[in-house]
Structures are given as C-alpha cells and as structure tokens.
Image 1 (cartoon, rainbow, N blue to C red):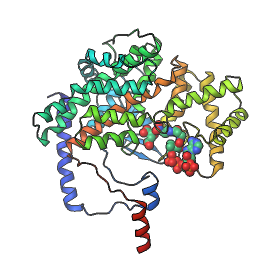
Image 2: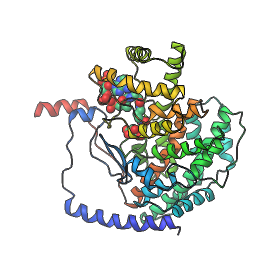
Image 3: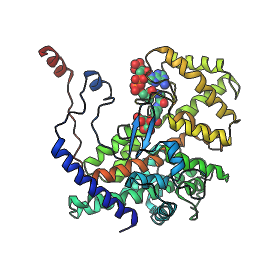
Image 4: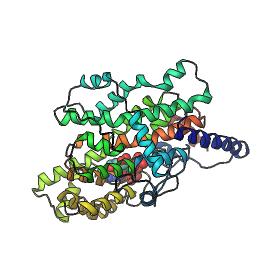
Length: 435
Ligand code: NMX
Ligand code: MLT
C-alpha cells in the first residue's frame, strides 16, 4: 500500500470509530433549524452536511484543515517554485497533516506515474466540433475516462462496503493525474491548431500542466498555476460543484461520474463560469469605452449600465462570504509582485475600488465584495492566455483536488445516500394555516 493511502486508511479508520461513538452519544442533538425563507432561498446556511477537507467562515474566508490561505503559503512545500504545491494541499486535505517536501515530491512522482489517458479519450473529444465550449469538452473527456474506474469495476465484482474507500482513493488519484493532460489537450485543440505538447516529467503537477498548455515559457506562469490550483481547490461542501460531487457520490456512482457532475455545476455563470464572464465583461467595457485604462467614473457608469440591463456584475457577491475573498487577495498579492502595472490588472484593481459602494447602495446585495473570479482572468491575460472560454476548465482541474479528497472521506466514513425532504407550496400553506 502506498504511503499516502496507508496514512489515509489509518486516519479515516480512527475518525470513523470516533464518529460512531459521537453519534451514539449525541445523535439527537439539534444543530440547526430551517426557516421557510431558507427552503425557498437556495438552502443558504443550513447545517446539513459533513465535509472534512475545509471550512468557510463568512468573515475570514476559507480554511483548509484549519489553515488560512496566507498560512498555507508559509507551511506547504513549494518544490522548485515560490508558491505552495497543490500536491501539499491534497495531502493535507486527505490526511489532516502538512506534508514534508519529500512527501509532496512523492505525490508529484505518483501522479506522474498514474498519468494515463487512453487514446479513445482524445478520439472522443475529437468527435466534437472544436468550437464546443471547453467545459463541455472537459466533461466529455472525463466521461470517456470513466471506463478506467476501479470503483465501478470492483463494485461489479462484489466489493464489500469496507473496501469502498480504497477504490475511491485509486480513482481519485488516477483522475487527478489525468486531468491536466485532458484539459491541456482541449486547450491546444481549441486554440492552438491541435498542436499537442507532451508533459515534462521533471516538473510538478501544476508546473507540468502550465508547460502542457504552452502559453508561455515564463516560469512565473508555472508559479501562477501552482497558486491557482491551490486556492481554487476547495470551498467547503455546500458550494454547487462540491455538493454535486457529494450527492452523486452518495449513490455510489464512481468518482469519475461524481466529478463530471461537479463540472456540470461549475459550468454555470453564477458559479465557476463567472471567471470567464469577468474577463468578457472587462473586454467589452474596454472596447466600448475605447481605452485599456478606464477611469473610476467610466467604470462606475459601465457598472450602472450592467445593473440597469438586469445583469449581475460578475466576480462580485457571494452566498457565504461577507468580506473580500482571501483568494482574491492572494491573487492581488501575486499581481503586485509580478505585474502590478499591467493595464488589465490595474483595471481589476480600479473595479475593486469602484464596484463595492455601488452594489452596497442598492441595499439588497448581502456581499458587495469581490470573489475569487474577479481577479483570476487578469493574471491569465497578463501571461498571454486570453481565451477566456477555457478559464472554467482551470477552475475545474483545481476543484478536483478538494472534491475528490472529500469523496474519499465520504466513502471511508460510510456516509449515507443523500436524500433531503422536499415540500410543495400547498404543503407550506396547509402548515401555516394549522399553526
Ligand atoms: N451583481 C448584481 N446583483 C447581485 C450581485 C452582483 N454581483 N450579487 C448579488 N446580486 C443580487 C442577487 O441577484 C439578488 O437579486 P434579487 O433579489 O433581485 O434576486 C440579490 O442581489 C441578493 O443576492 P445575495 O443574497 O446577495 O446573493 P446570493 O447568495 O443569492 O448569490 C451569487 C450569490 C454569487 C450567485 C451572486 O452574488 C452573483 O450572482 N454574483 C455574480 C456572479 C459571480 O461572481 N459568481 C461567482 C461566485 C463564486 N464562484 O466561483 O462560484
Ligand atoms: C466556490 O469556490 O465554490 C465558490 O466561491 C462558491 C461557493 O463557495 O459557494
């Protein structure tokens, strides 16, 4: 058994035993109540799911196993770069322990060893028109990989419940290893005349993804990908992509199917597609105003036009956060270091100054601050990746780390089929009449 799997086995067996006792002693404790507004309003804030890998605080933002993003930059191994390695974050989410440099290096090597994408996966993607949205191509690629599922094969062969975690681990590791190859293939196919780039085995997972994309030789872009893949990985369990993974996985659909479902959710403009919408919106603004450095007044006017047209300002607002997203801040710090005078970066910062007071003045928006998507595109554009139709795939490759680590935990802890109760409005009216 490999070193990560055996650590995960030990940790998850211990927690499973602890949860058993905890539920025996406290299973009837009430942890929340649900209002009618929550039932109609997207189930905001209802405590109804266990997700071990990260926890979101409305004011502070995300913590992965208790560590904030600035803390992760200090603690996680950085390999040959200057940003935390996503390998380190995956190890942390799966075991609750910060790995050593050697352990992170082991995981880089292990993902390289597992980086296997059968030829039919490329052929399946090739059957789609090149103009097909990159997220659709990505989901099709993941589904074409599903035939490799160890979980599905072992289930068919009669795998006992006690072995689910092992098969989920195998699939998660194999899928994470394969995703950068599939994603880079789609990018090169759609935007670079199909000229494919083979992986450089001397690089870590995120850096080799950057190299396969072939956007630039600038090593800063490899560091950007390390940072990007780390900060987008997980945002507790209630967001749409994580929750979808959890729901599908709870039916014992394998990790490939569960992750593909997550990507359908991530492809929505209120969720991950917002990263493409932000840059599209900025490009349109710059085009309309006729300058690459719009003033605050020009931005404010454009924001008012967006709102008057009944559209949302992409990259702003959040269902949980009530402060600027620390993932936005981490990208801002990266930009300050490397490209603070870039036109589009300056515009993103100017939008950051201009938008919150306008959104606040509407009186209905709970969070006027930027989220993760408000900054990511500007950095990609700076390094030459202007094809915003691909941006959500980058988010998706990163999100695999969190949702698949959490899925391994769900199978190891034996979580049940998810099946909440729904109501009709007639039921609600009857209930109110009887109150
Ligand atoms: N621009 C305009 N209106 C907004 C915005 C915004 N950025 N954010 C919220 N509102 C509106 C929202 O549509 C709702 O309007 P109405 O009552 O007319 O239906 C009202 O303000 C109250 O919404 P909230 O309770 O503040 O936000 P909610 O939790 O419902 O939605 C988002 C959260 C993220 C869906 C919302 O803020 C939004 O649409 N933001 C823009 C899209 C975006 O950036 N999404 C990415 C989120 C992060 N991610 O990567 O997933
Ligand atoms: C995410 O990263 O999933 C988004 O910020 C959305 C969320 O947390 O609801």
